[in-house]
Length: 477
Image 1: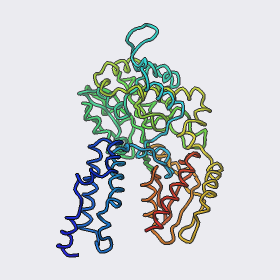
Image 2 (image 1 turned 180 degrees about the vertical axis):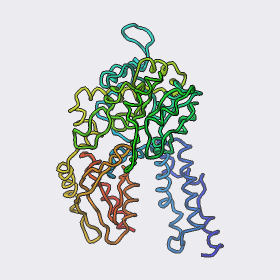
Image 3 (image 1 turned 180 degrees about the horizontal axis):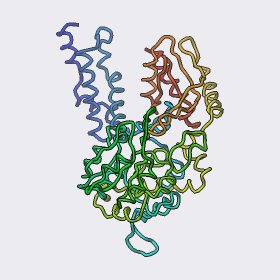
């Protein structure tokens, strides 16, 4: 198309004021704020302008391209994008249980109910009802944490990185912290132990090698500037083969001999021995506390199955120091996190109930027979979509724990594998991802995979509807 024809087409684009004067737009202004509607019109007209300049072949459209009937859906779409929350519910069909990008652990219904109850009214967040005076927000979960773990004291901050930062800053600012070179980990989001240590004001003292560290390495590094020993659980990777590491018990004994504490960053943290339920052995919080460690830190939204939080447990002597550190206020949790965390922790008073009901633990321990039933239910509802354009297959596969926990653990699972025959699997994945709600899947060997381990029973109808809409859109192309 010639430049002059495109310029003529550009002159046909209606003005914003012309659109605003339309009766349909006046109706929109009764429902939505004027600034929202105006922005949507300008953006819609801008999209039309770009299409004329770079994409559209006007001979196929003619004057219909500039009609209000053609433009109105563009404006409505832009309005919807403005008023729709950016943080949205998605369906996790990836098979990654603790999916950091998808919000990690879903909450138990009791946690959600408590969260809503506390958030819609006032609460005793920092008020002692018995004494009728100001209280501490941390007391609401300290007792249950100590009861479950055996620790003397507890403190909760906004995430585990904050917990590690607080511990190092409180106990070792301006002094040396000894840590094995093999434990200087980096996890998702470029969070690195050396960087956190630097920000805390502590001085890193590396010992050992990547694959082997001995107790003598720690002993040789101890000096007048040593403040503590740090052990970091390599939860998101494993070093295999010719390896050696010093046990937490031996580090605690070494710390006692030299009169300084040991801090253990457990990372994921778990209150249940998962090996009893067919999973790999992961050190529990209770086992860690029994070693006599000064403080242990771990996340609230990984294997614990609660909200994002950084939990610190340990000796009262050290925890009291953490509580008066000014950083604690900067890292403190709010009433919503407290409500969700407290309700989650109460479920652990009955371990069987915790395993059966906390969504993360339930998903991790589901056997394939239940997953197969869920897959058959979905497959049955998809029968009507089967045609010459794709195939549906229920088959065995492997899920992942995710969240940096149990990196070597493979979870046998059942998946629905969809194989497109005359369109790309990537286009199907994109259409599902951009649906409402978005369905997040994975692709393997030119098949789209819907993993039944991370799909809830009540989401089956949403999956079916999402697939129907995605396929309808693909067929219209």
